[in-house]
Length: 112
Length: 115
Image 1 (cartoon, helix red, strand yellow):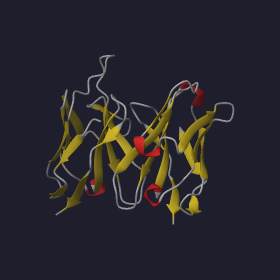
Image 2: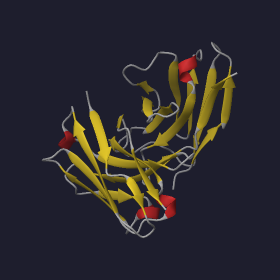
Image 3: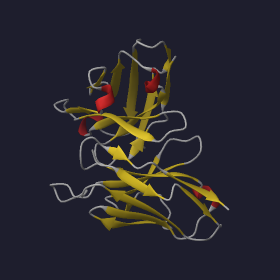
Image 4: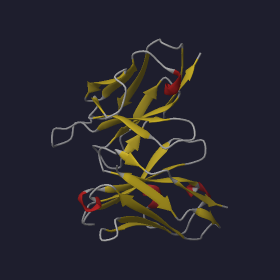
């Protein structure tokens, strides 16, 4: 199974400051069709997960521009350019390239 | 707007069965793979099962193989999860999700408690 390792586990951030979350895969996430199926999800307290980014870096409709994704192969990063209060929650990476589909363990973003 | 609404959760004894349902609206259900995910209390997200548009392919996480069955009725825009031989570790919020590799629409979840 593909193991996704997220870091850090917890990320205290001052409002307006940038934040970065890493997601490392135990094997390449490039599919045989050429796409890289790496998704980032945000889960606010008490809510269902919401997809922020897909194909590693494509932002979903309605997602603020302060969220960006980068990376390829086995190393991916989610960046928030300036954290706002509404960004508090748990962030997960998820790979859709290999069965079984797997998630990272999650990163909790909190305000300092 | 695409929406997914789950139902069927509840309290069940170990060894019991439960059938979850998910009704889709706002998109062409028959055109999409569909997936069940779950989240145990205080835990992270876990993929459970996925099914191709025509039912020709189904995949399961190892821990539920032989106990859970994913199915769908495209005429009713509905997805199902039949859960048998339930265990305490199956206790979770179960989410219905659109997609296979890019999970873009999630339901609000239905809670299953095995105790």
